[in-house]
Length: 325
Ligand code: UT7
Image (cartoon, rainbow, N blue to C red; front, side, top):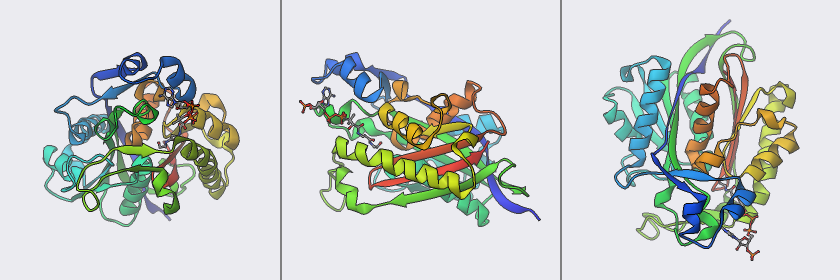
């Protein structure tokens, strides 16, 4: 007996050309390369050009993923863009991507789960394919957080960057979800009691402004390590695996201390953790696919590897996905 599942058949990325280093930031606010490096692990981040919108980043990542998969835009049945920095309040950035790619069939929508956006979008697209809503999905994480940062607030402006990453999911018929290439499963969580610890202080129905990102960093940090460890451990246990079975751990890139702390708590060896935040900063929903593409293209992640994604962000939202590459 076979069952319909989804598998990742291509991935792509796009980073704006402008690079902002810690030294650049030290000329803008009262900070230093030493502080940022020691507390976060970030050395530089990419910043979108003035005329570059989230959709432009998403379109570039989507084209890269299509080329990687050897597919045409018309092969795609639906598009999910995970973003908290859409071009406009509506319509969805995903429809702008759809139009730019010349796709006029199927459907496209945005999904908002802040830094957990990609984990949520992958789960949603996998579920849609399993339920028969389409055969191929473009799943994109794209953000221009530079547009919602308070550039005078050193506690937040040093942490984030812009970018986009994409994967293509394709329906497949498999017999053994643990051995064959597919999205094995996902676990998602949220707890809205923590929504005032990481939020944007503006929005259409409250202030009629876009607002700026605000964060109680220490409280987010404290919650993150425990929450991520729990959802990762639960995912590993759900599929009767051990941490040693994981070939590559591709976490949301928020803070090197969170990455190290979580991997240690869970028992995943440091050399299996994919780290790109030194060059990308925290790109929110784009960070997992950007890290993924880096490790696929440099030859670390290979066909047949067991790959674990995790993310945690505003809401709080968090979650994990287990993928046989
Ligand atoms: O992706 C979504 C989830 N987001 C996260 O996961 C972020 C989680 N939080 C963090 O990563 C960390 O809490 C931060 C990196 C944001 C902050 O690190 P911390 O070790 O928690 O530092 P802190 O907030 O306790 O600040 C320590 C000191 C303070 O000075 P005093 O009060 O000790 O005199 C801050 O004012 O560092 C100061 N500080 C800075 N100094 C230089 C805060 N930001 C900066 C800065 N440069 N950019």
